[in-house]
Length: 123
Image 1 (cartoon, rainbow, N blue to C red):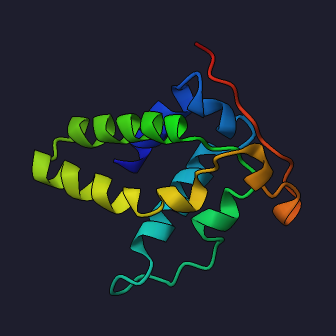
Image 2: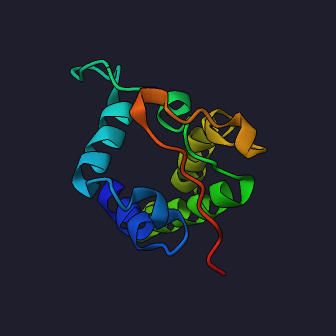
């Protein structure tokens, strides 16, 4: 399901621009590691939390809405029932406030050596 989701994200003309310089398989593994952290038999996630990893990105509510659409589509295409779709989206929404910015001034470029990323809606 993660591969399907990121396939959609990387192909998206808007959200995909954030990932132009990011290896897709590495990104998929990072999300899997993050989601599985703390589960029995899984290693504790030692990467940056979403607020840190996205500090340099100007992520708007509209972008989060688009990403949620892509995630919903990937979950449905993977064959999960609506109850599972709802649970996934509810869990995912817990992190929205940690990455969403209301203005560019809320971004922290230079965090971990990363440049500011501002992506305009191509439509």
